[in-house]
Image (cartoon, rainbow, N blue to C red; front, side, top):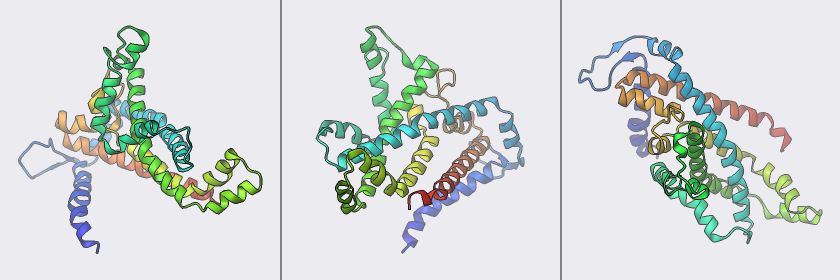
Amino acid sequence: MLVPALFFYIPFFVIPIVLGLALSFADWSGISGSLSLGWNGIENYVELANDRKFWSSLRITFKFVAMTVAPILIFSLLLSNAIHSSLSLLSETVKIAILTPIAMSAVSIGILATFFFSPTIGIPTLISDRPVDIFADPNGALVTIAIAHIWGGVGFSTFIYLAGLQAIPEVLYEAAKIDGANVFPRFWKVTVPLLRETTIINLILIVIIAFRSFGLIYTMTRGGPYRATEVLSFFMYKQAFVSFRMSYGSAVAVILFLIILALTLFQLRATRSGSSKFY
């Protein structure tokens, strides 16, 4: 029964990963018609180690991840609990505004965010009554992209939490009510511990998506201003498809993969080591 899925998985996932790893040890521009590759060992990785632009992109990537992961996790947890509890405080309009990005691509979200933060008719200009080009400010541009990323990621994480909330037996909440627990103690002592596995899945997905963020940067800033928003995925794109250094870009992709793998394994180990606190 796995054979049909493997027909798509192998050519579109496994083979590109293997080829990308092989290219990282070669010297290929990406536009040459020759199938022969000039192997250069680990020279691409040595060059990366001495490339200031690479280290700058890596620093910006970690900064972007730090700005987005916690807000998405917290907002989606609170929103899912509010929707699951059918709170009247959360109107249908708010639900639609938060959950709509699930059906939108990153490019669509980027275009919409660019319109909202436009220096001529955007929100910052309307608030200050004068033209404000937030995209010209290095810090402001990254914050703007982070806001758009958070808005785009909360809906998906909310649905994952909603699935976890539906698996929690209602009898546990009824028992907590009998013991005199109000809303916050029930949330902190019942909901949060029992959503631990869901939180682990959500956290891993949020981190991976943040590290791989590309569409928003490409649509909103193209890495500017002055490379202030050039995350590692966009740096990889520029090396491979703008500078035509496919092998060098593949080396960046391998480094990005190893970083995500290491962080995922660390998260799994850290969360599982504390399982006795919840069970």
